[in-house]
Length: 113
Length: 111
Image 1 (cartoon, rainbow over the protein chains, first blue to last red):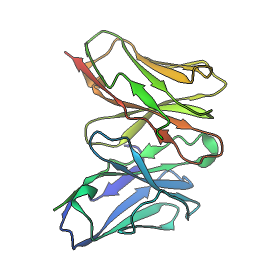
Image 2 (cartoon, each protein chain N blue to C red):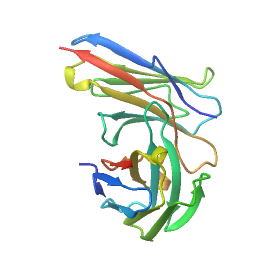
Image 3 (cartoon, chains in turn orange, blue):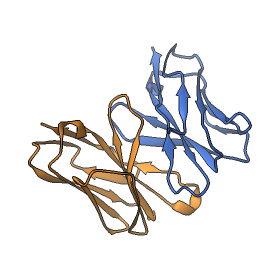
Image 4 (cartoon, rainbow over the protein chains, first blue to last red):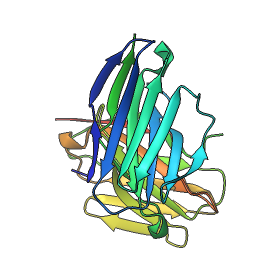
């Protein structure tokens, strides 16, 4: 266990659904991240939150909406997704002052029908 | 553009052999990290090497860093079937707050 949990582990949704992914870290870290991992592609950074403030948004479509209510929790709200959004969504956390070693959750396998 | 590129993309060896994976990057870095990912799971941090370090060891892992060539290597000695996974390098550069990951090397260790 890395100290980062993600729920749900698997999610199947239709293109008109609204769902949310949840991430929780128990490590006292001050930064949290959402990544997308698609088959045969490098890990894509989606969002970065530092001290609960969004500091990076790498041209992610607006159908993905992150939320960081406190330093331990991170959500990714999903709305009107496309089949090409099917992927493994990984959450990570780090302590920015210590080299930025990242601790990852197990991921949510998302399938959009 | 992608910062880290691993080589080879896939590697298959027998149990007990050593496995070497390489990573090249483009810009100057603060540190370089190696991660491991079992199929469909999250990444696990293996080792971090700072830009002023040349070599680092952790158990059966040995990492080297050559900043003049902008490259790093990960050596796994006496490999085991349980080492089968994808291995990624990631770089932390300059004022960037986040890591940039490579495409990974898929290592298969045959029993």
